Each structure stands twice: as structure tokens, then as C-alpha cells.
Length: 311
Ligand SMILES: *Cc1c(COP(=O)(O)O)cnc(C)c1O
Image (cartoon, rainbow, N blue to C red; front, side, top):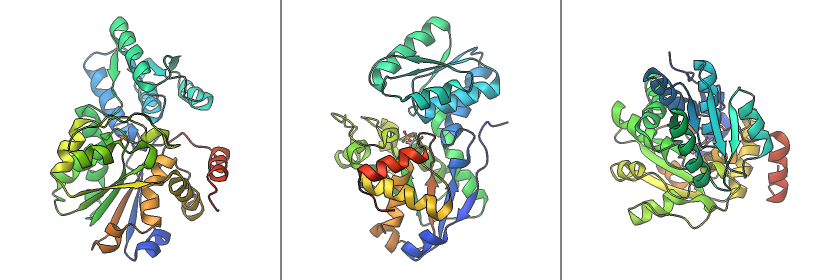
């Protein structure tokens, strides 16, 4: 049995009013780990355990680490999550609350990842990469299969991009169900636009630094698979400001009473702010509401105040 849930597919009247066409929300915020990561990490964890792994190791201080922790708990397998020092106390204790061991190593993800590799080697555990693995993409692709099974064929899919695991899975799923004419709007924040840079130049580009509050989108370099797939499909890259992403989180909370991270607000802001692709496309818009556990009411208020977002 898969570890992820089949999530609600909801029509959004407030968003429909923005773009003058039907907008459907795929509510990945309803996953047990609060994000779509449960799909890919859940599948990767299940496969690793079926192949004999007695321990799972993750190097993500964000939603991927939390999803592995939730997966390990469901499978009764011990989990170690290595997080960089930048992962805040709340996220560390959230991951720890599942029973996972949280270790701190390095000041950036790359350093935490190296340490996680060592732990996996020493313990014989399975190291689950947060976005660059076929199991992850296959697991994420299930989000599209669910929408297809519900009978919806969108004109455009709106999706956030960090390391590109979600977008790869979405494109893989779209290919499998035959949505060849459906466009994709791939959204990032300006300080984390590694997909935009790579899409423009045709090859993965390593960003110097990440400068966005949407830390979940902060992969300095996207996986090469996402570029390969994006070159075979009609994908538009869209870069929004942190303020737009946070503004969309606040508006979405009021409109749908669901709290999401700015990484998800980025995708929502493309609809709230009437991206030209969404105005011109015929057929409904599907938004992958990717969710995220890295947000609280007070944190959202702090971001909104710092970025002068009007409620
Ligand atoms: C991981 C994540 C992303 C980015 O996904 P990638 O697979 O890294 O592109 C966006 N939003 C949320 C909430 C996430 O957890």
C-alpha cells in the first residue's frame, strides 16, 4: 500500500475569478507529511526497505527529510536525517517528533548530504536523494495519474520548481497519460531561479547563491532529467518575487483556509497575478498545491511584515 494519500482535487472560485477559467487545486498540502514529497520519498523508502535496507538516511532539512521520517515511521524502520545548521529548531523537532534521529552537519545542504553519504555507508542504510532519482520521479508522477483518473484534462499545469523532482514527475506523468498538448508553467522565486537559468541556457547552471525566503526552492542546480523532459514539452519558466509568493500564501489562507509555504505560494501567485499563459490558454488550469511543513502563522506574519505584503 502506498504511503502517500490520494489528495482532494478542489475547484477554486477565487482563482477562477482571476483568470476567467476553471482552476483546480490538487491539494498536496493534505499529505501526511504536508507536501507532495510523501509520494516520491514514500515510494523510494518502500523500495529500499523491500530491497533489504534496515535504515533510511536523508540529507534534507526540509520537506523531503520530513517525508522520509514519516515514511520510516510508517514502515517501522529507523531513520536518520542529516540537516544543515540553517534548518530551524522547529523543523528539527518536527522531524524528530516522528522518532527519527536528527543530526546536524554543515552549513549548506551539500555538506549535510556528504555527511549523510558517510552515515549511509557506515551503517548500511539507504540514502534517499531529495530530488534526483527515478523512484522519486515515479512517485511524484502519481499526482498526475490521480488527476487523470478523476477525469480532468487541463490546458495548463502550474507547478513550483526547486531541484526539479516534482516537475520531472509531473512531466513524466503527463507523458504517460497522454497530455501532450497541455502546457506547463514552472514557477520559482527570483533568488532561487535555478530552473529558469538552466532552461534559458539549455544545460544545468550552478547558481552562486540562494537568496529567497522560499528555502524549499533553494537548490543551486536542478537535476539534468528535468531539463531533458522540459525540452520535450511546452514548458514556460516563470520567476516571481518573494513578496508575490508570500502575498499568495496570505491570500490563499484567506480564500481556502489552508496554510502553505512560500515555495507553494510562488505557484499560486502566478494565478493570482494573472500570468499571460494562463489568460491565453483554453481549458482549465491545474495548480499543484505542493504544500510544505515549513510555515507557521507567526512566520507567515513575520515574512508579510518584512516584505510589506498587504493583507
Ligand atoms: C520540495 C518542494 C518543492 C520543490 O520540489 P523539487 O522537487 O525540489 O523541485 C516545492 N515546494 C515544496 C513544498 C516542497 O516540499
